[in-house]
Length: 145
Image 1 (cartoon, rainbow, N blue to C red):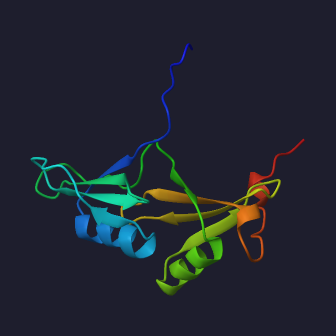
Image 2 (cartoon, rainbow, N blue to C red):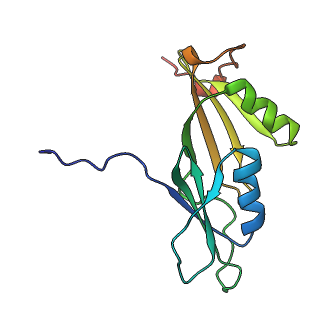
């Protein structure tokens, strides 16, 4: 393609009627930080990870736009993460329902959790960089010959 590339994923955007609860989830549960945001004409928040605004939130509560029940045709959003056991402990201590699994082949461990808007968040961990016991492989993820 002669030097053309779409690059890497910059951010994802959620339109929510539950701005405060959503900000709290990304701060308290996932450990992102609410940071600076341009002075848009509509309310919202930008959530930062490692200095980058990776989650953009738009508050639709002042409008008549309905709250969508989940992420629609986008099934999930994934982060390359660190600290598998620590995140499992964090989610458990906050009473969050989550699923952990090992990608077939064992090189990647995952945690799946839903935000207050029903958006599925996938957290990926390189197994070689993590401590502790590996999560189980899920039978429905393992390829069949």
